Amino acid sequence: EVQLVESGGGLVQPGGSLRLSCAASGFTFSNYWMHWVRQFPGKGLEWVSRINNDGSSIMYADSVRGRFTISRDNAKNTLYLQMNSLRAEDTAVYYCLPPTFDPWGQGTLVIVSS
Amino acid sequence: VVMTQSPLSLPVTLGQPASISCRSSQSLVYTDGNTYLYWFHQRPGQSPRRLIYKVSNRDSGVPDRFSGSGSGTDFTLKISRVEAEDVGVYYCMQGTHWPLYTFGQGTKLEIK
Image (tube, rainbow over all chains, first blue to last red):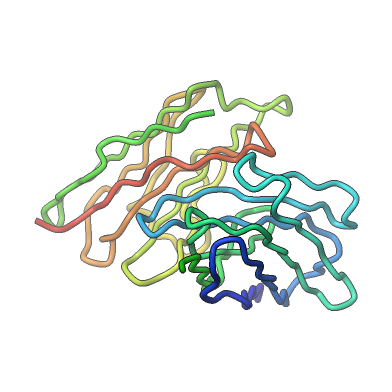
C-alpha cells in the first residue's frame, strides 16, 4: 500500500525558513517523479513543485521559484521541500504526491505569521 | 491553464442526482492523445482523494454512482444518486499542460 507521510511544518515568522519532509513507502520511490501541492486556508489547491526520479529535472510554480527548493534522497525514500524567505501567503497545508496525484497523505501545516 | 468549476455551491437532496462542470481555458488533449483531467473529493477534515483520472476512469473503491465525462475543454462529474458520504468539496485538475498543473476552485456539495 502506498503511503506518504509529511512532516516538518510549524509556525514560522515572515522571512524565516522551514524544511518539509515526506517519507514514502509501498512503492519503488526511486522510479517516480514526485510533487508538492499545497492547500490554502480558504481550501484552494496549488501545485508547488515537481522533481523527476533522479533529481535531474525540477520545476516550480512562479509563486515559489527562487525561494523553495525541492530535493529527494532515494536511499531514504524521502522527498524534501526547503522553504526560505517565507511569506504570509505561503500559509497552507503541504502535501507530497506521486505522479498520479494519488494517494494523498495527511499533509503538514505551515503557518507564516509574526 | 485556468480551470473554472460551476457551481461553487451545490445543495442536493439525498437520493437526487448532482452534476459539476469543469471548463479549461485550453484544450486538455495531450500530444499522446490522452486527456489528463482528474476529479478529487475532499470530505470535511480529510485530505483530498482522487475519484476519477483521465476524464472518466473511476479509481478503485469509488462507487459507480460517480461518473466523469467530457472532452477538449468541457468536463462533467456526475453523481447519479447523492448519499450522505458524498458531502464535501470536489476539485477538478488538469495534468496535460505540465508542469503547470492547475486546479479548479472547488465545488462544495451539501445536503439540503
